[in-house]
Image 1 (tube, helix red, strand yellow):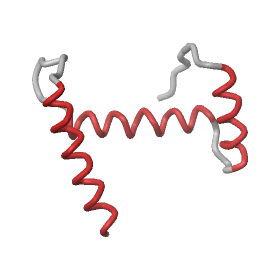
Image 2: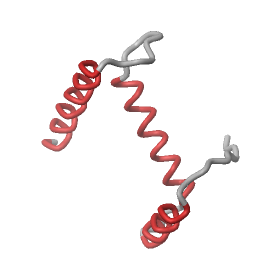
Image 3: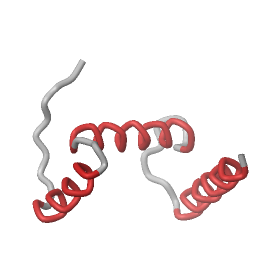
Image 4: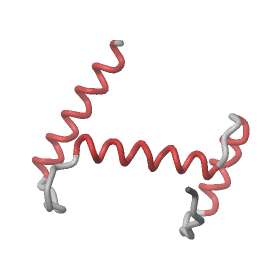
Length: 77
């Protein structure tokens, strides 16, 4: 199901992005949907479990390290 959302974005950046998206056959809303999906997938995979909402710098570095290792594995495929 789709729903309309109101967000505030930098107009110049959005317009510049839309030109690139149109050249590549993509819509702005489709692009945002992909970004949100990818972000959600990363959060599910890498974010600490439980109610912890604030992360220490060491936790963030650990997450970045895991993400980098996974990306390197993907690139080797």
